[in-house]
Image 1 (cartoon, rainbow, N blue to C red):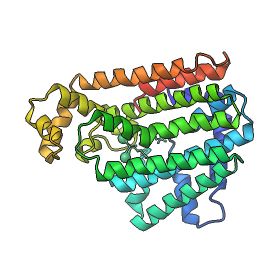
Image 2: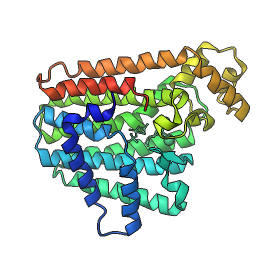
Image 3: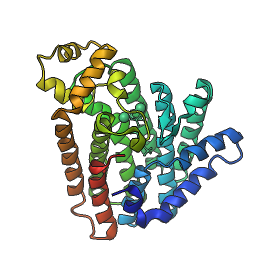
Image 4: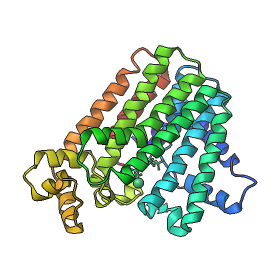
Length: 321
Ligand code: IPE
Ligand code: IPE
Ligand code: MG
Ligand code: MG
């Protein structure tokens, strides 16, 4: 299923989210507006704002504040992508050239900062101090995760560190996408907690799938470069499984010692992982997280949004984009 079909029921709400995002940049430097328009027009799956909208609608959150929060979430996500592509030196995103491929480093950093600021402003317009607090905390978790990955997380085969890393960089924002909607709806503590956990589980599944697609995906479908993680010394779940099961392989030994690989060794290892069982094992793990997410919805009312959140969890592990 493509996201267009999946989000059919919230199509109008998602358009309102985009309008709210666009409204943030009017009155500033025209190039900021042009950059944001290009990024928005290139697409993006809009999964995080969809989570906020669906969770909020499931439990009858007030519509305007929900749209505002969903816009804050998508804009925060967009800002992290602008900075992530600069940090990774990545030239393609959503099938179009990245900002850093066309602009100077300074202009890219400042545009990312601008988008972060707009996202924070939107979060503040929910008029909920706990939501603003959660939003800021999430940003500190993401940045701390990225700094940890940059300074100490390269070339390391460590499962615990991997889960912490993917929580920080991805699942934390999914968790906040769901939890903030529950907070806006002033849901009970137990309801908020189960929806937070739904967000956490789909977030973990989402990043495991992203890490799998970095081995198995097609650049034309995924819209971003493939095979970059290991080349940048980033050890993800498929590599961890592979190395654990081929502990006598010289390249695996090198990685286990925390040593970085040459381009030749990396290319050979990527091929080996691609055709190994490690991909399937990682997919199973992502599917288990999606199933746990679906279980978190068991006490929710049997309204269409509940089914759509179930379908969303399933889509996350079935996707090829
Ligand atoms: C990309 O997220 C960044 C990750 C956390 C892996 P998405 O794959 O949701 O990016 P878009 O918004 O659809 O482009
Ligand atoms: C990006 O993760 C996470 C953040 C932007 C915080 P990735 O580096 O895996 O995302 P892609 O693969 O570039 O989309
Ligand atoms: Mg990246
Ligand atoms: Mg990735």
